[in-house]
Length: 148
Image 1 (tube, rainbow, N blue to C red):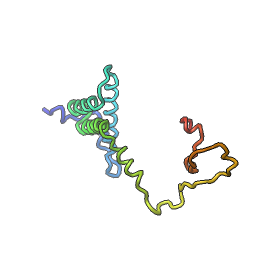
Image 2: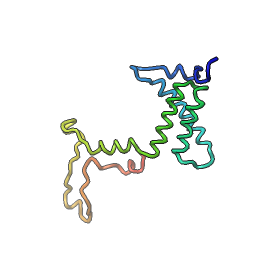
Image 3: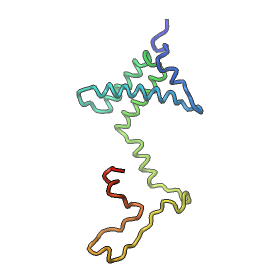
Image 4: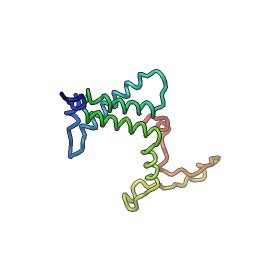
């Protein structure tokens, strides 16, 4: 007799789909299961720290998920939920994005997106003090309020 972990779950076939050797099906199946876990977590009436809630959800999906979804999709969902738990402690994407904001590639897109400083005639600036604003930073008022 086969164990529950060896049974084929309802998402096992989806999880095997690959496009150009990229396991797209596993990402879809794991994301769907993680979304179901998120929905269940949202039903908890007590505020639980995200790392604990997501950590428990990852453990539960890996423990019991194979019975319903298949072993591989449940493992992928567990990885997604574990990543979410760790992301609540360490903002990996934010840290890396911050490092790359300081890096510029010389010569790439030269002349494109360069900000230039403009001088306004003094008569337009009477009574106005403050720093000069680069042209690229001028934003319509509606955009500042999230309308665009």
